[in-house]
Structures are given as structure tokens and as C-alpha cells.
Image (cartoon, rainbow, N blue to C red; front, side):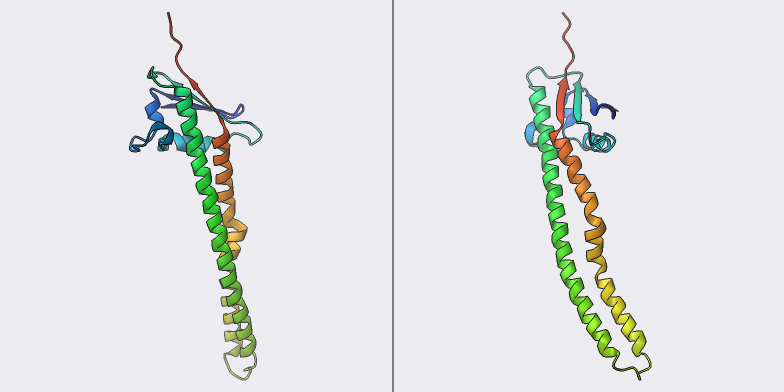
Length: 185
């Protein structure tokens, strides 16, 4: 499978011998529902980030030895759009799950923080005890540590999932063109 890309014009080129090379050989489903080949998907995904978001994407698949009985354009276009549409949906679900986990973590973290602040205040009433101040600070630190995960989710973890979903949506919506060799008379 020879591959080329021209990031400046948004065209990703794949040259394959026959259309079956585009699909995962272990997937028994009909073509339109089949998974795409992992190497082809990884190649396409790697180039989507190289092409500016202002440029429309286009996948140009050149098939050197097509099977005459197939409608290659419909087959490849449908498979590519379905596959990346499915990945976009999975990515959207992953994002929802992360936000759900973030909300749960936030409730737990805030509860722990409130309890530890109250416990620290209670420990402050025992100033005559030798380790009172150390315990107060330790309990407060534990409360703030409980907030670590929700803060991590809401500040950092969602960005990669959002980017991945946007990339898949761009790939789902990209134009697909199949180029077959011209017949010589």
C-alpha cells in the first residue's frame, strides 16, 4: 500500500492493489460494515492533524487492479464514512463517560474536602496536644488531594478526547474519491 499526502491541498492519497487491502482481513462482515485495515486507518489519522482545519479533507484511493464487478466508489466511500462515523460516536461516548466520572469524582472530592476541613478545625481545638498542628495540616492536605482527580479530568483529560472526536468527525465527513486505471483500447 503506497501512501502519499499533500497537506497543503487537503488530499490524502492511498494506492492499493485491490479494494480488499483497505479492509481488515479478520473481519467477516460485508464490505460496507467492515473495519478498515489498521495500518490504513493509522495512516489516515496521522495525516488529518497535518492538514489545517480550514482545508477540507479528501481521501483519494487509487486502486491498481480493481475487480470489475464491484462499485468501488460506493464501497470505499460508504465504508470510510461508516467506519470513521462509528469511531466519532465511540469517542463521543468516551467523552460522556469521562464527564460522568468527573462529576462523580468531584462530588466525592468535595465531600472529602468538607469533612477534612471540619476535622482540621476540630483538631485545632487541641492546641495543647503535641502533634495537633501536624495532624491538622495532614488532614487538610488529604482533602485537597481528594480534589486532584476531578481537577485533572476537568482541566486536562477531556482535551485529547475532544480533539480525537473532532478528527474522526472530519474524517467521517471528508470527500472520498476512488481512482481506477483507465482502460486502453
